Length: 104
Image (cartoon, helix red, strand yellow):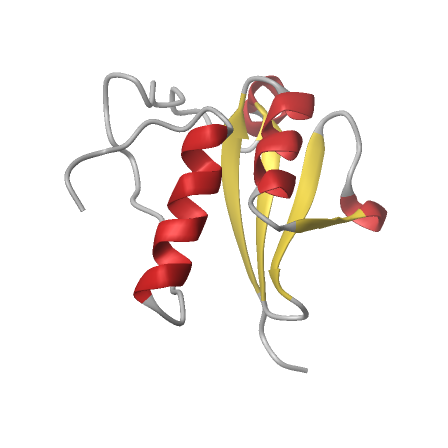
């Protein structure tokens, strides 16, 4: 069996988070999605992001969840096939509530 990657991310609003990532073109595996967590498929059978409601995320660690508005815990990057694809993904993200981190 090939190894799979599941990146776990704490979120505050499940509906808003799923809507944001759906707008970027990602799907969710309904088998592993409920009100506490959503399994976002980045690459089928390989890479997934688990969007976990903060109270549920907290059950996996004794450490405090980082406030993403004040601190950085991790940088997540997605590859794209072209500069145009990067620009389109960024356009979708900004249109759905993301903020631009800096100059391109």
